[in-house]
Length: 85
Image (cartoon, rainbow, N blue to C red; front, top):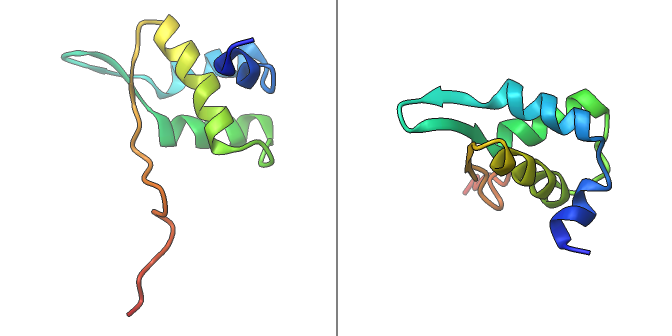
């Protein structure tokens, strides 16, 4: 089983479809899905705050690509860590 398929097993297909449709923005170059927004929307919709961001992003990415959307991976590792020095 592929990694993306395993990640999709954690989420309902209808939830993934709803999030992609809600988060996709029409641009001149096509429909773009910002992944940080999509992952957050999926968490709010499903109430799943346990699954990893990576699993959610993998599942959402697969659906977005199948629906002809470009995916923007806009979350940076450690973005929530502030340097207070």
